[in-house]
Length: 301
Image 1 (cartoon, rainbow, N blue to C red):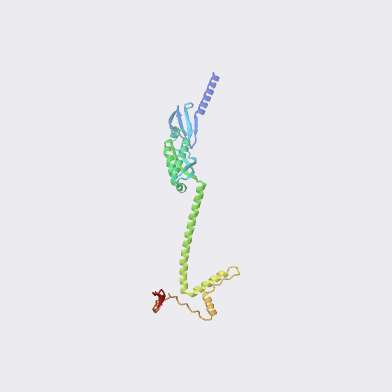
Image 2: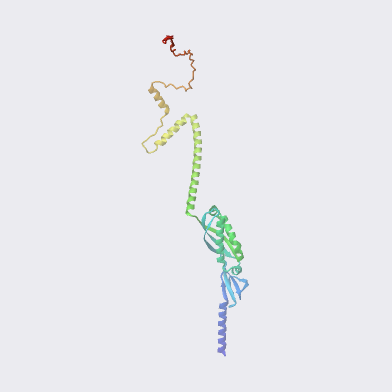
């Protein structure tokens, strides 16, 4: 009798241990447990820690509540200004309602990934190339809104979306490089011209000051000579005044060179030529011959 009781106690204890082992579940801190009893969703969501379910009746499904980082594969598309680009992005999302994430969609990760790819292709078609390169913050917000609208019904919230890279064709890269080089050259020329204008104004002011003080011009000449002579070379450049050359030229000619009077337009003087009578020369008269009655010719002057 005692042996039978001991065996029964051991059997019950073993069955209880097996039941506890089958019913015991541990939910981690970053997880939530969704229980299905006979296929029907239980409204109570199991919190982190130790929890019990009914073996062979309840089924516990754990849902990760952490922020998931999902890379979006590169999508090729044509922008609104007819440029072929390849864009890839990163989506950050998390589950806010574990029950809806399990019940409303078969695989919420796959659904979010497909929605992100579709929305990215749509954003590429609606945007221009300059927006993709320089105005990414606005495109990120638009892409986040497009993905978040259907994801809310799945119990998923999109934390943020970032466009990671924009790949351009090689021909477009070369065109943009030439455009940037031309713009830089234009700016350099404008800056150089502005510097020349300012320098010319300063030189004009310096010339006016030196014209009032002749000694200043001589001092500036000496400074230039000193600056040239300071270099380690064997050539010394000295300015030669033009007035000295003119003086030597006059001395070589033996006297002062008369100044040429300004040329004046030649005056046209109407010469009066006396008119002389023109004698008409008449041709000599040919002698007239009269015939005589007797048949001989006689000459008459």
